[in-house]
Image (cartoon, rainbow, N blue to C red; front, side, top):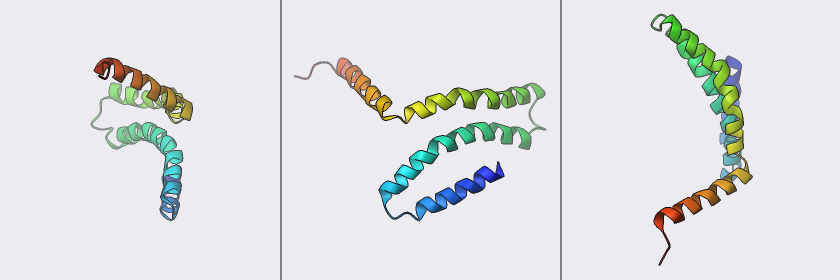
Length: 106
C-alpha cells in the first residue's frame, strides 16, 4: 500500500509539472480508474485495521471479504466506462430517453 501511495504521489507531481492542460487531463484520466479501484480495495482494509476494536467480528469478516470480491467485480465496469464506443452509445441512448420524456419539439 505504501508503494502504491508513493507511486501516485510521484505521478501526480509529474502531472502537475506538465505545461499543457490537455496533457494533464489525459494523464489524470489514465490514472483515475486504477486509483479508484485501489481505493475500493485499500479503504475497507485500512478502516478494518484501524478500527478493529470497535468493529464486531462479523462486520470485520464481511468488510474484508468485500475487498476480495468488489474490486474484481467492478474492474470491467470501470474500464468499460472509459471506452469511446461506450460513451457514444450511452449518449445516444440518453438522447432518445430525453426526447421521449420531453416530447416532440414544436
